[in-house]
Image 1 (cartoon, helix red, strand yellow):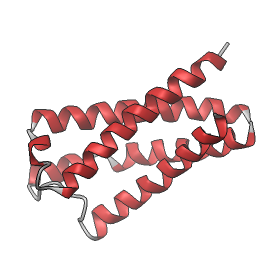
Image 2 (cartoon, one colour; image 1 turned 135 degrees about the vertical axis):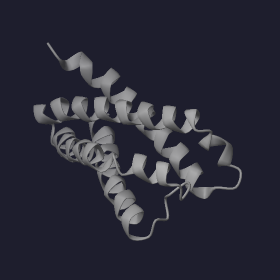
Image 3 (cartoon, rainbow, N blue to C red; image 1 turned 60 degrees about the horizontal axis):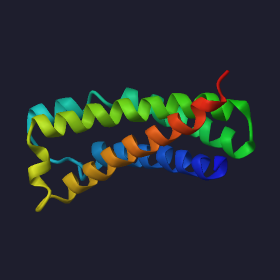
Length: 132
């Protein structure tokens, strides 16, 4: 299970970097081109960067069987849950999920929300038992 979670954390780190490169270079992951939406999204890179760094360290640590993997896996899990909840609540409050039938970017956002909440919750639930 540690190896699987480690690989998922590494995938999370790489996908997060790819998301932000796409956001700033192509703008392909933008759900709407409204100023309020762009301002909200631009508030995330630092927090996502922290989560990605913790995911990278936690992933390598879990694969290597290091205690660092447990510590950073827990931190990454907490960050993923927090970011997933923030993003999902924003999307709900602003009616963005209603765009899904015609918006591939919104489908991508839904996948991100489910990934963050699912993987984050799994990491916390699995790894917290190791903490004394």
